[in-house]
Image (cartoon, rainbow, N blue to C red):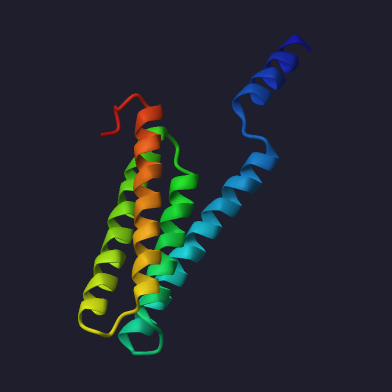
Length: 134
């Protein structure tokens, strides 16, 4: 009886609850789905079936998911840096398009706002970590 109780207590302490297993399974499934969406959008773009904005949005959704579900503050910061890099590229592309008279000022301003917001979020994350993520 005592052995059974000890084994039962050990099992309770060391195992992951069914709810956690379900959540982890759903998170993995969602990440795989976001990867498939990003790959699909990339293929569509290469075939001329969608605009590059769709590719950017799909990639950003994947990165934001990975950031939001990262295991550590350092991992979140690393993913946020990727987001900042991607949004800076979007802003630069919008600036180039507008310089070539093929872009729109509104889109350029929105892209700059998104990039600056992501940069601010990164700096905030780094300051909460005590500057270690720099």
